[in-house]
Length: 347
Image 1 (cartoon, rainbow, N blue to C red):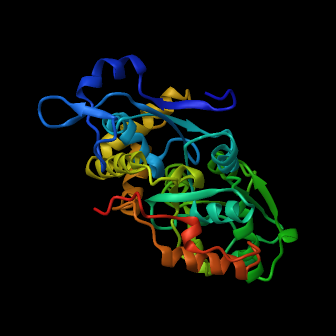
Image 2: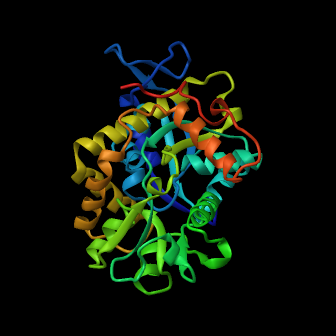
């Protein structure tokens, strides 16, 4: 584990060792030498493949599919020992994947586009949240009625480069420039920034920060970015280095199968999904989350989770075209360079 990041949820190695005889290999491909029959006709893992995965932030409702896959043992059944990590800051995730050797990371698709525009060899291999959740949020009690009213105000963002780029595009639509507002990167502290008056508005998600603010009695005004003309896109995708796709490795399909199972399990049992988030946060020694609040966020997010891990090439193409028109990227990127559905689970 890198010293600047905390271990999130890790399958205990001694438990895995005791349970190897019962581990199933899930997915396509036989004769790979990774397993053997246990007498019942099933495949059991000979050796677990160690991989690392960095979340887009702290454990929460939008990445619950990964947390459930880990907690329910789906990764182990797929022959994988997965270290689930979190970044110190969200904007570090592309660098972790591209340069520091992480096998996987979670990112919004616009951030993948920005990273590819900077020359990072990243590619999305599956979707966790297929619909956009990003919104501009401000308190109802404020005197803000439109984007134009943000002039002279402070806007807090998580820190992803695409957020500031999107904000510039939104301000331009309202006749403002980035010089008309103050943008503050607060990482995981969007809600405290708004509540304590350090920001007048935030770039957040209605199903996460919006729910938290409602629980605090702030009565937020949540306006999805699509109402301002930003195209639909995959809010959260699984990303890896392009070189890992060489040879069409079957373990990637097993990995995405486990993630899909985790998402389906969360949809089927929201209470268990909330418990998985609370357990992950406890392991990170984060402030205890109120079970009702976590459950409310999970229930608000479930309709947004990907029913399959398949991504839309059409939406990706539309997003890239819009970002180029806005000057957010300098060259056209084909959807095939950004994503592949070779490893997705169709149903």
